[in-house]
Image (tube, rainbow, N blue to C red; front, side, top):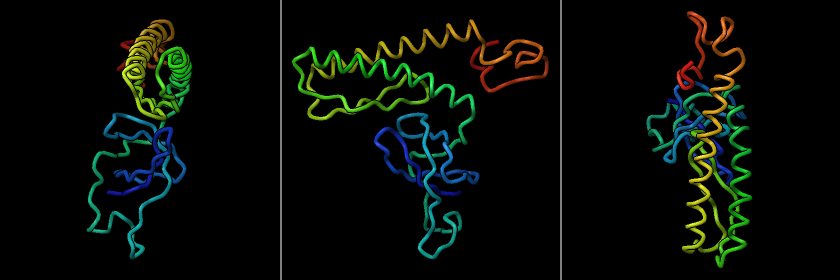
Length: 184
């Protein structure tokens, strides 16, 4: 097992994550965390005090809850970019509703998981009942929009260019990572 420090989330938290295969520094990776599936950046490999690789150090245990699944793919990056648009809309809607409410909470930013259905909102100040209600409403609306738009795009475009054609993933013997999810 190899251990890496990864930067994860909008707040740039540094966590120790394990991996089964080597990953280059600076590479974006898909990480399974206690919150779900997220995208992180590899900062560095963890080295023991003796300078040996971390996987040869018997005193290192598998870090709880953070495992590098794989480097991101082009499809992952496209999904992140698409989800980023929805996240921006959710942030704007939340800030507008907070301004109109009696809440004193201020939304700083939002962590978005790769599943597209999970938002984790970061507030400045106490989160009162109004702020909690607004955050819950926004998260529900976001999840609904993501589900609806994702399904609509899959019905229109499939899981990617040439999906369902003889040149694409729907061809006999061909497959792609997205086909299991799009049903084509």
